[in-house]
Image 1 (tube, helix red, strand yellow):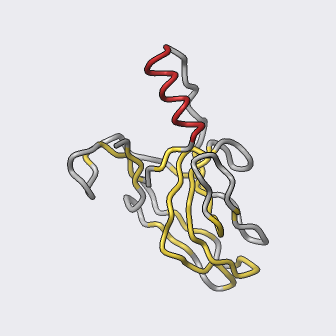
Image 2 (cartoon, helix red, strand yellow; image 1 turned 120 degrees about the horizontal axis):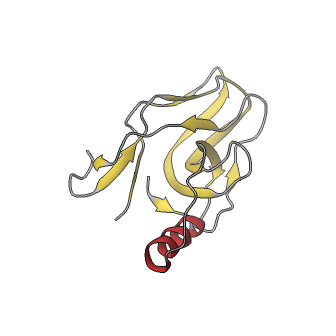
Length: 134
């Protein structure tokens, strides 16, 4: 995953080239989408009983195992979304936010469609999600 949002792109460019400080988020949360966002935001986040964004932690930047030529951060623990979600919704994208609700979209990525509903769960094993600059 590494499609930076317009918000994050501007923050990084301002930090590096204009000496503008970036405040690191207190926490980062993974969201699920039934309609993918764009770099400008939007999209349709999953709604309904049993759904909440999941807090995510990352390891230090290291060589991306998918591409050894770039640096990446990987999720350091498994992320599991509820098995009691109702109604069933087809998840087509994920995104990282700087808050558990509302907040700023940081990055997003399309995924292979997966259904989230009663008795179903969506899991991302440790080290399966990467964020990189290219």
